[in-house]
Amino acid sequence: MREQKYVSEPLRIDYVHSCTSTLDILAEPPYDALEAPFALMTLDQRAGHGRQGRRWQNRPGESLALTVAWPLPAPQLRGWYPLASALAVLDACAEVAPGAPLPGLKWPNDILSPAGEKIAGILVRVDAGRLLAGVGVNLAGAIEREREGLEKAATLASLDSRYGTALSDLEGRREFGEVLARNIARIFALVDSGGRDFRDLRTRYAVNCLTLGSRVVVVTPAGARYDAHALDVDPTGRLLVENAERGRHALDAADVHLARPGGGESPGGQGAKKTKGPDEHRSRSRGAERA
Image (cartoon, rainbow, N blue to C red):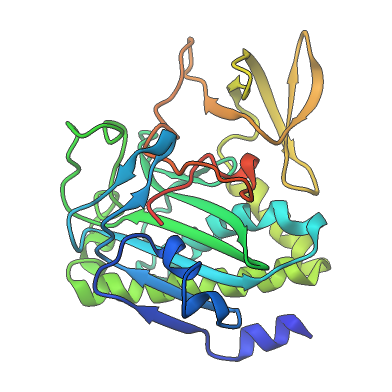
């Protein structure tokens, strides 16, 4: 079975000292011809993708850029891989800093601080017959808040001293990247299985998703904006919401913001995000970061 193969065999994880974009590199020789699964990571990405064509560059060593290449899954399951990637981030956090509070998860795949500041985001797209899952995580260091797009960002180390200890040096930060890559492969294998393990995964996502049960502000690709109540995530990974005028409906291509009590939007999900390409899963790209 595919699940047994990918869980039991070591995952190839390549590390580069610096690069432009891990997502871009995996689409180029020699990685474009390499059989998946495998991963590429760096702690010094020079030209990561940002929302609306912006370029992203962090100070060397302070953020992780990781892309996992995975065999192309069945179309009906593809919507869940971005969401599963977010769970893998939480699992990696629990593994490297046992007992530390976990960050929050906002549909579809933004990782947030308790204040709603963005710590990590994910972009999943199809390229050359493979699924590429790019993850960007702000690990440590100071956030340069004067830079565009970073006003509502935070680092993992800022959440708790146990993260700070685990990520205090480059060795610990590389270890976090390796742990995250292995957790992504493990969870992707569960999605591949499509059985009870996948159903359990969906339940765990619902339990950890801050969006569900909350009032949200929806902004559609056409620019329509309305309030709704987030109810559930359907079997394809779409967010089910309810609105007085529109009734109950599923969202697969919209920005969804958590609403503050008393009105307004929470800051979550407003950090730098990836631009969606033609083969990207639009509904899952809201948290796409520096990959």
